[in-house]
Image (cartoon, rainbow over all chains, first blue to last red; front, side):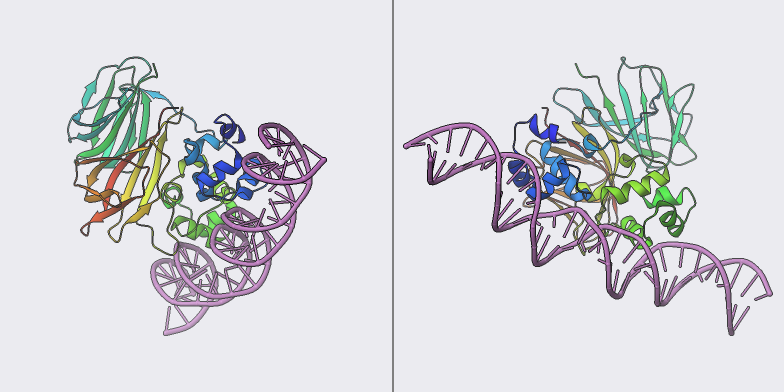
Amino acid sequence: MRALREERGISLSTLARLAGVGKATLSGLENGTRNPTLETLYAVTAQLGVPLTAVLSGPAETPTVRGAAVSATLLEVFTDSDATYELYRMRVAPGPGQLSPAHQAGVTEHVTVFSGVLRAGPVDAPLTAAAGGHLRWTSDVPHSYAAVGDDEVWASLLLRYPRR
Amino acid sequence: MRALREERGISLSTLARLAGVGKATLSGLENGTRNPTLETLYAVTAQLGVPLTAVLSGPAETPTVRGAAVSATLLEVFTDSDATYELYRMRVAPGPGQLSPAHQAGVTEHVTVFSGVLRAGPVDAPLTAAAGGHLRWTSDVPHSYAAVGDDEVWASLLLRYPRR
DNA sequence: CGTCGTCGTTCCGTAAACGGAACAGCCGGT
DNA sequence: ACCGGCTGTTCCGTTTACGGAACGACGACG
């Protein structure tokens, strides 16, 4: 935490002012003598430009399963300027589902389901998620997308390309 | 958060006892009327068997306006390992809307609406999007989220932090 | 050697998060 | 209808995290 601040070359006083927290708070936070609220912690991490998870010792495991594909309508809504991320809005119609070939190595797919039930992932071991669920896998193998049941599925699809 | 508990079939009272926190605390936590300390949050998530990152959400990104009902619920679904992107699933309830303070300079917000009509963006010049629409703005100024009409809004929220 | 500016820590009154208890609502059994 | 046990919410006194101010330490400058 302190390291994050120091490698940016800003003082405790400055960071406290920028983040809108007291110096006493930030000092105690860096020394581990306080038990911060989320609000406080976020104010500081946001100012440092890192997500909360960057300062939490949390495991944040990555249950990487492989494969998945879209049998759906993809609407590209955003591509990052340096093209390492692509965000899509996805609709999967009821039916037999669709297959997607393997992407380049290192590509990760993130799917968040908003309505319906989606079965997606590697063709040999697909995952299932209902509304609110989130799936993740590395898409360097063939993968599939299918709506479970009679309802269409709406979801967001985020493609993450490896840093070049 | 509440969903995590309910899908395990345990009551609020039971979880509070197992996690060693007060029922009032857990109740307020699930309803977004508290700003929990890390200690409290960890006690609960550890008992649920999920990492802290599984429930990190709204209060941090859109700090709960004290005394007011929270109208936007954020569920973090994914944080990139190098911490330049955060993907959220967002629900905005009908009502007066919710304000979010300015983020650090250079942060861009991307919102894709899945259902309902969302009015969001800088407080002085908000944008509107219906299902399928996409909004984007730089979030270094205060911005707001509000559902237009009587229907709740479901959307994805992508936060892009500047490359360091 | 004094003075100034900034560093990070500590003190302290205030605001709020905390746990326990009391509460109303709902069900199932008698 | 009555009760006992459960649900989740609200009330309230205690604890504690909060920010502002005061503090000593250090370095730069005259």
